[in-house]
Image 1 (cartoon, rainbow, N blue to C red):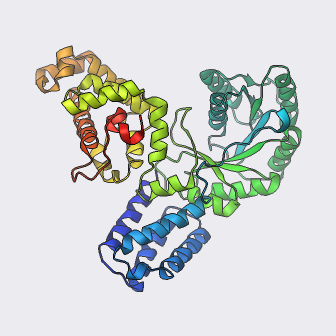
Image 2: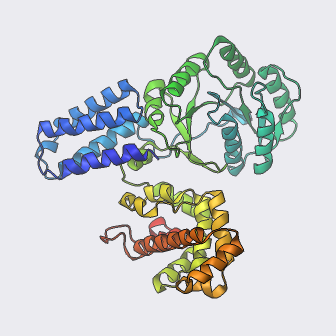
Length: 459
């Protein structure tokens, strides 16, 4: 997540902190580097200008220049200002609104074509369902080929019904019929997938305005594709001016992208960021917390989100058993397979490491250790092609055994070697976490599920 920006900021502050007391010139030099890093990350120029000015004013107006830990002081100021840029101090995030006086919750999902609107509609349906509501997804996008079919397929995956019509009709008319059907079926939440925009013209504006008049939405959420950058931010501002949106969702935040949209959109539009999406899975929807996000950008971790993910995906008894096996050195490839499954449920391993304070430096040790769906299937095939003795004691895997396993799993000896290297890396990381941290012993203590995070995560 914003790895390039995060690395540059951390390196800048590390150099600043190594100087002892700093001068005004030292501060200006560091802020110039921060300015360049933000601009290269595609953060809006006006946002960067105001952000740097506020940080400089705060730093010069405090005791930073005389502090014996000026680097830490500046990081603290930058963190505070990032939180303000991202939406301010909202510990619980900005939750979705609910329908008033027993009326159903109604959500319009709109934004640029290709931003992930249809997938977000399904993710919101899953989210509402998890909160005990009975949602209905409504297809109103007749322009994009197979948009309705995609929404129906996603609805089947999350077991949420979809209202769709075969013939093209005005979105407001479709919404009216969908709401009439919902009224007699116990549905108390409707999510409307709308037509995407390339440029915000009068036709799109009129269609969305008519739809909003018909639905009287509880929420109007604009999807921002983080890969699109400032173009998407500009479109969000135009949509908000036309129909008065209530919030932003930033998609594909985990992608290989500069990511400046997520740092700009709150300042440019004035709308709160309510969610971000960080993966392909339908459960990859995170409520947005400005303070947590700022901490992740600055390499300070995000334990609160990690706790939530772990509690959702790791059973307490599994965590205690994994703690025992790690401490006794009994962790083997069968345990590794179980951990791979848990990582799949929680997200990518590198993103999880981002959430652990002080562990960002270990990401390099995990290069290639993330398991996408295809990679997990291959790893599972390799491990299941081993004998029980081989899974329990990988040290006996000589060249002939590895060639046999490759043939049995439909892979190559190089794939087997890669899997074993990943196992060794993961075991080293998890034991470091269990025993008190990284190589310098300063990492987080507390073993348990997902590589020994247990007590730190409260599981």
